[in-house]
Length: 505
Image 1 (cartoon, rainbow, N blue to C red):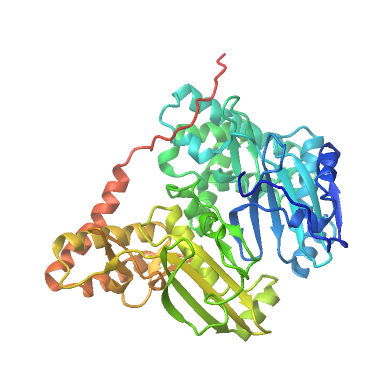
Image 2 (spheres, rainbow, N blue to C red):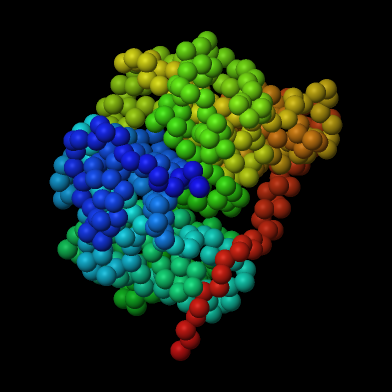
């Protein structure tokens, strides 16, 4: 039986808090004995998306024909509750706010995931459970399909613009309507926007909000995925004919600003491993591991060699006999913890940051160590223990760097930059050799960049060139620029997406 199939009863310590269950699903959860906030929060599954203060898990319930997605908030700050109250949703969490929007969408027969349950426990944790849109893929994957005909693409553009117009006409607007948050059904081609936690309801959607929503959607679709004609078709369907030219120019100007955001830059990158990345929370935030490691994680979960030991980097052997690299440390960050508390956000340790970075590199196809597990444990008001566990990747670059290796170094540096990352410390020490191919070996010498300017790119390139012999420096630059030229020549990738039926006329 799959690991994430529910075959359990929630813990007995489940009193406190409150829940609101959709009547359509109430009897199903009663039969499973899940009748409290803690019961829903304890549902086991695999993490498919995560942030320091919350994550999303895919859950399979016994006997259910479809899966569910559980949004879990570990903490809900006063700042968040005040923000939601000012927006008209009461003293509530993101999850409760999103549930309220989903109920309104359902009542208005507008496209959205079906809400299943929401609530909060007596520890201040919140959750939202929604039903999976079975078989649907996000807009980026559909647009990546070269098998779609021009008529099919234009029909999709019309549907997309009409959906935005329909939402705006009902007084609903959201800043999160981007390509990865629009799902496309494989047979009908129906569109379902997801992630409504920041949506607002108003009497009338103002001009600036309409422009911003369309600009975010426009900016999140990479240039290679949609032609100018297809983009204009979306705008025409969403805006109508009144002041279309002026509004279209405003959308383009706003999109140019939005493209600079890291979250949008990430969405515009080709996703290499969208389905292979899964995580399981073994012991809350103390241990988060990939499924094949979580299955054999030692008990008790929070123990040596991951916690209670001296900081450092060492090789360890997993229960399944695999060797791995363990990076563990302790942090004393009173000002960082205070700053996070004042901002209403959880503090993130270096271990969690490393886990996030490894996950990010894998997602965008950068040859780097595979993440196995990470975690953090707050040991006091200002101190914490943390760790990151990853596979061994390659060997150090030994001896003189020849011209061919220098070219590959330049190509990999360009790939890092395109994934929104920079080098830190001694540049060459970040790289290694795995079976004749250049790879990232020392993950502590790479970091995610909030912004990546042209001068940042030049600085990294010059630093790497200075670390190789004089006769190989030009080859590093050649490799860097050849990688850029190769990417600009690439056509749309073909992905296995079933065709969307088109009704012409």
